[in-house]
Image (cartoon, rainbow, N blue to C red; front, side, top):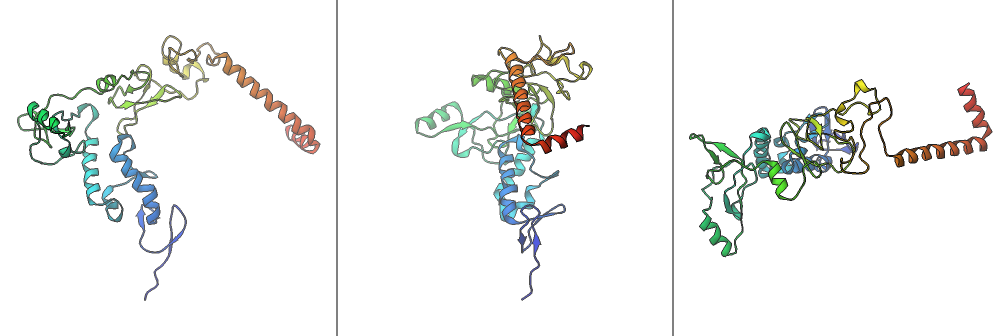
Length: 299
């Protein structure tokens, strides 16, 4: 019986036997593919900001991982989702017809199924019988009559609601709990940190202000010279950190001073610096040789 050569996995560095999976110049064992690659595809089919899956800088194709990792059905659904992601966000329209839950497609699926769109009376009868009626939500196409036609239920549909309307109906406040990219209208959330954000739609990546939704620059450093900074973050416009209504809103200063951080932050930073100085002095006093060496280096 021939002896199978061993090879080293590029991720876990364990010695392996068998074929493995080659990605560029790297070779991965099955366990590393299941733990590091498959979850990326699972996330990408659910969330557009997680698309596309990558290994390093290389974009991964689902069909290469069909067996034994993803399976044929998953790959078909994933490729349909890729078609949806390829449609610019602002031009996507989703079917709002009511259908029975059991016939509901994955959003963005494309298949020529039987007509399942319900009339109002049909939907009411189904609800009364205990069945669940949901929105179709499949992405629409343009038929020969130039109408929006759903691939799934074969029904016609008016324009979909804007992303802002959907979020506002949930009671969310634009500029506080969500913002829309000014270029592609992808919804973005920000928990904390700098109010400069970048669109997580990989086809867009527009930079803008989370507070007002206008285009803005991040800047290399808020303490950099005035000529290098975007006046968007000045007082009277939008704060670089926190919300304008907050007591700890931080704006850039354009008078040659450091940004106008709250006094409590300045005091805390000064105390940390003083504490570090005290600890360094204590170390040097306890070790004359270290002190002499440090003085020699400085001299």
